[in-house]
Length: 406
Image (cartoon, rainbow, N blue to C red; front, side, top):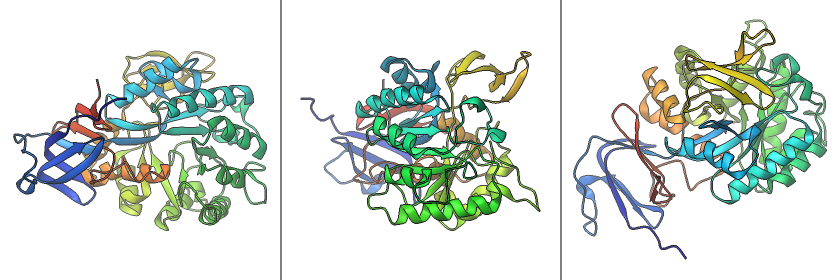
């Protein structure tokens, strides 16, 4: 039996959902946040540490990540490879990580899902996300269109069984046959399995997306024990029909749904996938409560430029940007990200978004997608996950469940 860790007291500028405590203290005791507040009001049973210039952030929560540290979740053959990817992001402050798979054939999906479920049981991961296989071939992005399928509720149930309760989200294109708009469809199977539908890799009209969101929202609202009451949109703008003033498509439909608190939009705000002005505009439109910042990271996160794999697709990273390798060897579509979530937060703050909003979108909001009320904020009673960063939002130390990460 492992003894509870000794209390940890941290002092610095504390980022809470309500604002920044310029000289605050965070107390972690027994794996739980025991106290958070101004240093001047620290209860006498604890002694305040010396003042620092550190930033104290909640442990970050990434709900869309394909790998890192040279290892890929869609290609992992064993638990060591899964752990390599998860711990790459943990060392940089992501204390709750959802592992994402890409479109593949049935046997591969089931085998990889079972492997990832073991890692969730072991505490390495927070859940599993499937990006496909019920996606639009016209908006396949960096995924293999040959493996994309019509909606199959039976496959959803099989994947959910392999996930053993850990399937968090699945990206689906609502226009694909069998996905939405009828009893016994993929949306119904997902919600019944405890997962949250996510709209993405779609060429659908605005009207089709609106109908799918309405159906998914109703299913979540009427299902006991639903993980979340809101759907998500997978990496908004990317892998979607673009906005046109006479054809608003999935982007504006998703933004409107987020404004109605029916959906959370993912943003890969790493400086490559989206322009800074786009990111600022989305924060202004729907607020941090409607945004989950994600990395969409693949194996190259934390690694040098070079050649990598993303499922069956060959990827080349050059100048910090991952792109598919085409048949003639040239660079193709963007193939995921190479950033850690703290890098994304730093990019978003540099774009002009307030620090508190950026942190909420990288912690509290994605925690709500997971259905987790015990993580995502520096609030007493929550799990003791703390990211200690310098003033430039570079990681210094990471506390997870009250213990320092090596």
